[in-house]
Image 1 (cartoon, rainbow, N blue to C red):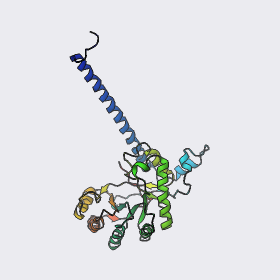
Image 2: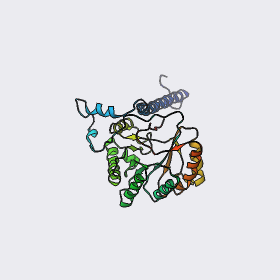
Image 3: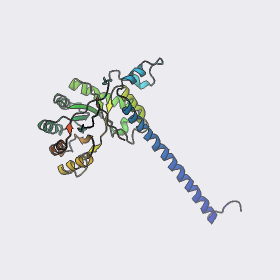
Image 4: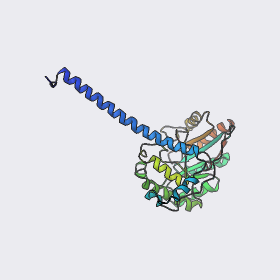
Length: 296
């Protein structure tokens, strides 16, 4: 017989072969997808490592004879910031610590600010929303007390904000204008919702990163995590997480949160600050003239 009968040994062997080939094909597709995303992230990292300024990119984009390349480049003409001519170089002896708080303003922001003032330490706040009288007042206090204020977002969820480059720019611009009106400054640094690499921005990641760089903005990820938004966290566990994840790094960007539910964040700060100051670190706010921190 030329064809294997259903239920015969030969039939099952052929079915196993077909299933195996299908599995192999699926794995190949997945590998290609992952490889593409890794190349996208690497492209962003390579750009930051090789460019001391994004001014040249702005000049190149705006001086092309064909005009704008993408329609979204004409959106929000006021949403541009100046960039430094060069990045500050990191010396061998430098040990810098950057406290970052994501998600405020909230009922916890004042407690965090009070603690930082007492400890005489400056930090960075990546704010989200806060388009109220109280929220704007807190933003102004952040700036007035010498901290850096950056953008996390306005109100969209990650699935919404990363629907397209247009939706991201729309959400970003709303927060950009709130901060500008509340503080009198244009925020130049930001953090992608969910970090540079997440499951929602895979299809637009490289193009979106390039557009934000073109506009002069600098984005930062983190390389240490306090875990202060994890369920069941305590003051002690937050301190331990910060120490364990920040060990043996020349520059530490600690991920913390400014949220109503993160009631132990401010309480953990004094011990974290003392530990790393004793270890020789200088606490600084993030500025757009330092080398960016991006996931590797």
